[in-house]
Length: 329
Ligand code: GYE
Figure (cartoon, helix red, strand yellow):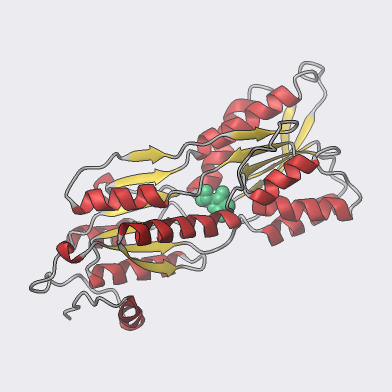
């Protein structure tokens, strides 16, 4: 089946709709990346403000660079990502970029991309794969470091209690099960706190990075009467749901329960300023310019770094954030 690189992305959708998993055909005569770079981008969904900002960043960067972006929203399903990647292969894109919703299950489809001679960029989250040559590089954020930062904040916050033997009860709402982000944030958090036996994670459950699940989980936790000193939430969306549940239960979040959250979307910064959360760890979603730059380098046949982490900071309670520019997500 020969698929000519149709210049109209809407035709891609047509291709996508009739596609099974076809191997790429030989480049049709006369078409090459000189005709403009085409990047196939498989995004996991729109589960959080962070994710929608990540998508916007890629789309804006592609438009700015004159790169044609074939965009697929997988709606949180890995099988949709695999289908989209196969369609990008059939469409003969120049580069495939994708956000792996979970770490496993990518070997076969990435082998197909390799066989088709299409370089792959892993974006945001990481993959667990036998043959590392199946992707050119990874650009994202350091989840382990984000977890460490959360732990270090708590060491500072509770420094006067350390040594008095009093347990410090932690509830953890983690991200999507099987995602590198959930596993890495949990790893870094535990790495810092495990030497201090007073810090006890008494409950850990996946809220799937969703606000609705953060609300539901916290509501059911509070109904059990669990004594919570700290909440470590793997993303702001879940935290925003938690805040509603705590207030409904008559609790003062940020006062009755110390809250550490990750992403640093505007709503979380606003909650920090209101004193409803105590520490916001930045996870930078604005990866678009770097992603497009790396894709263009791959099209030029250049090697790219295997791993690029975005610059990130931490926002603490009591900080003067009056000059902080709008977060954009
Ligand atoms: O923290 C969350 C999104 O993979 C870093 O996924 C991303 C995470 C982010 O749903 O808001």
